[in-house]
Image (tube, rainbow, N blue to C red; front, side, top):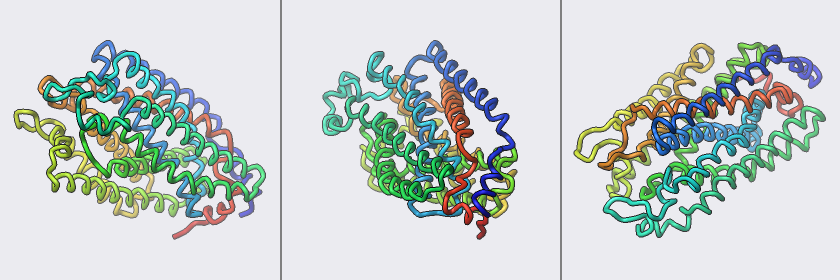
Length: 425
């Protein structure tokens, strides 16, 4: 198929007239979710709302990082089959600047309102177990070169700036190639992928440690960045597949996507299901086998109360075990569950829901009662997790939909587009 024919087939999207309407609805949902979350400060207090908001912002940031990684991997391996779906991930990268803005309230609250509101190590006077303060904790002193406010700011906003820079290069080259078809844009994206992948690897590890792992800074885990990476990719694949189905139902992708595209991206979702299980099991097994108190306490908080009774997080852990691995693993073994839209959609929604539960499992137990027990999962402050996810998610989809009309549905002059349109197993 010639580039002229391809261009003609995707110039007018059947859903273009409704894109602006959907974008407006997404923006309204996002603003409403953020406002309701803010009102939660009057009901539940700052700490619970802030922790719930951290779950929401981490969830959508992880998905966006995953999309950037998928685009980088596409270019570094010179993939052909994924060319027709790559553009949707590129549109998702437009959300990075808004995610950076949405993270600012957490920083401001931690600096000007209460230093230990979220991250206890930010306040050297914060009391820990045994009546000691963070400033006199030997473990913190040894980690203070990394765990300090300056490093946190540099790590967080430096990462956002790097993601925006890499994303801008990817989008510029891809969108520009639609206009002139120049191969230099392809070479530019390959170069971007070469340095972008290590940048993404180091930065996502840094924010996973700063934002989540440091909530309980005594804990040690050498696999935490890889666990976060797995959730990034799985979330990005799930959102990407849902967008593909939505655009197909609108009529945009009809005649462009075929069964093999859905099968291949479904196989990726299946592969990373196994990868997540391997990483998560390895982390748990190594900590359990070593039986070192500085490591095991993290899981103990998520299994037992101070009196030895089982808490709600133990059951949440079981939900994650079966819901994050066994359900999608056995479901995606079936060919039709990867290619039939009505079968694919529910499992992708399920995966996103379990990723959210997984983040709650990693973040919310940092909220403790007077006995040092983690607050239960099923409590009122779970509402603020939902409103935060809806709020940040609404802004995310608004950013995606605002970027969507700026260029073609697919990269029409990519040198691999012909192979992608005729892709078969």
